[in-house]
Image 1 (cartoon, each protein chain N blue to C red):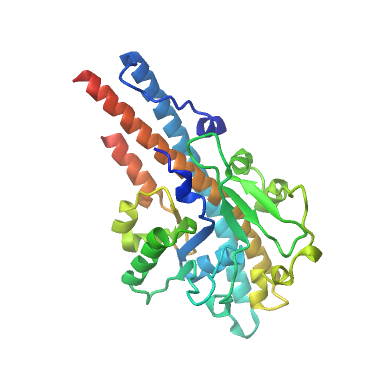
Image 2: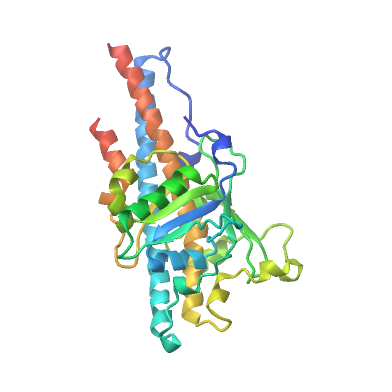
Amino acid sequence: MTEIIRGASRDKVSNSHTPDDIHDRLDELWERYLGLLDRYRVTQEEVARCFSSGFMSLAQANFNSPNRMRYGQDYYDERMQAIRTLSFPPSEGKAPLMKIASTQSRGSSATQRTSAEVEDDSTTSTGHRKSRENNLRPLQGQIGTDSLPRSESTRDPLKWFGILVPPALRAAQQSFETAVEGPLVKLAAVKSEISETEAEIRRTRKVMKARKS
Amino acid sequence: MAAPASEYKDRQFLAVIGDEDSVTGLLLAGVGHVTEPPDSQKNFLVVDGKTENSTIEAAFDNFTQNRKDIAILLINQHIAERIRYRVDAYSAAFPSLLEIPSKDHPYDPEKDSVLKRVRRLFGE
């Protein structure tokens, strides 16, 4: 499946091709397209699983919170800075390769994951946490928390809600982190491939029609 | 045609339009960002029952047209339904628009704009 997404041939069909070539090309595009749609569906299910687990933990944290405190927008830090951002390393394919980079203040390392790495993961048979542990790959030069500027070490969003937060809130954070680092980036990459393939199918159909008329 | 690199190289943030729990969860994951003052622009919008559709549309326009630092826009599917005509008409590669489930509204493929486009392509 990964090969369908990343390595599909990208020769443009032109009027110089024979009708058989164009038909073959169109068949190949449809095959790739159907593969991508399946990938999109499966990835949406992964997102739903991560979110469902996150919502459950968040509800649990809210239910058990002292003083009926609700973990929500009243506690957001108005000066928040993103600790998970996207970047686009050079890629060979047409669709840009997306990479999620995180500056984790709680852990001892900064991590980066690319959409290609995410695609290679098997997430169907294992739980979120196990999959996440397997997936995280530390950078070659690890950044220790001590070496981080002070502002870095206080950027953990959990701290908005106090120093001693309930385990359920931590669990919610982990579920959403898993979603952001894994299936959401993968979903964006697959969607981009779907759009590319759609455009190519339309182009190929046009060439086919032009040759018929 | 693939999007030129200049169109996305400076895009680094995920933006969210969602209900309070969805936004809280995603901000806990560390995607929240507020730009430097005096602009202090947020990359999220919390939508509740009182939020007007015009506010959602304005945020959608801001994230998709004005902001050049957003790479992915996440929107709860039930909120996307409220501005469906805008979501379905959106076809730009960047920011990538993704419909996500919320606590009370599970993801429904029938409503997803991506899969609606698929039906159109098959019907052509």
